[in-house]
Image 1 (cartoon, rainbow, N blue to C red):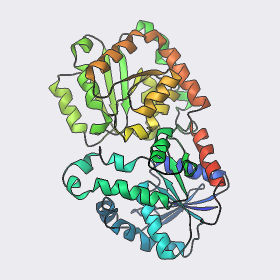
Image 2 (image 1 turned 30 degrees about the vertical axis):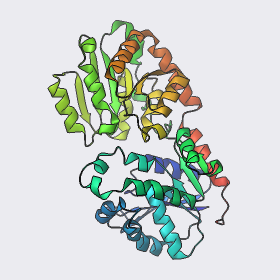
Image 3 (image 1 turned 90 degrees about the vertical axis):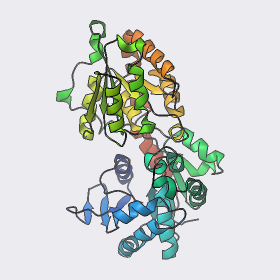
Image 4 (image 1 turned 45 degrees about the vertical axis):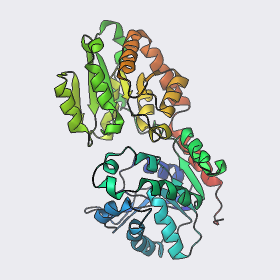
Length: 404
């Protein structure tokens, strides 16, 4: 099948899109990825597993108008002309829209072409729910311009016109079923770690730091990922300032960047904490080293509808390196940690409970290797991209070439 993936990015920059394209190519499909053009990059590039076609879509205006898509389809119109032009010389059998806002682009184009091309909606996240927590949507001018209720309403309208819907976790599937989407239409392709891509080279592997736990006093906590308010790192920093933790030798490593970084640095200084380290954003290839050198890995996301219907890559990345995980009680994360018995969770927003869970985890230091081994085994057997890939390729086998 000739698959046309449509992404709101300059590709290659998205590991989920890349992993899916590779999996589909290995299963015999021809994959084209339609993305934004960029100076210094060829308009067309053969990556081996996919052909990238970079289109002259005005990114400045696309970014500005994307958020009003449910009210005014300017974003779709910006994509229509360059995409329809390339499709005159490059036929596809199916559209694969990455993220909700690319679904109306494909619907708009299909209508203008008069074609019956099926559309796959690949929902990397619950986007209407994300707008409730994302900074840009809740501060001026986004808070004025973005109509969140129209996103939720249009989401159902768009999804009903698609052939299949891909979500990243079981909780997301149940959410859309409750909203009236048929179960058979929804397929789960989780954000699980790709064990072939996310690892340390053999020459850099060292003895695990958990091997000498009994002789060490310092505990290194690690967070990797974006730094925004809804990621919840402010709760971790506030917890470190609590009297119960003051006398303990704890370090917090934060690897990442984002709109809330300055606030976290200010908060750290205001609380006179000298055990919080900001490393900035690091290349994806360097992240395994940070995980290996840490003791406990963190997912402190603020609990919301958004975080209750998505799963971060970092959970299974941490687990792949045999690390105990301390996380807030976002539903999918809590479910997996409790299922595997590979860490502890705390009630989001409850600093006292967080402090007590940190103390509990530290008191069980000798159990960390056992927790880590459970996590590692679970990733090797179930929570890995190989499983996700199979779900994806099996879904495509159920799709007919003719749009129904």
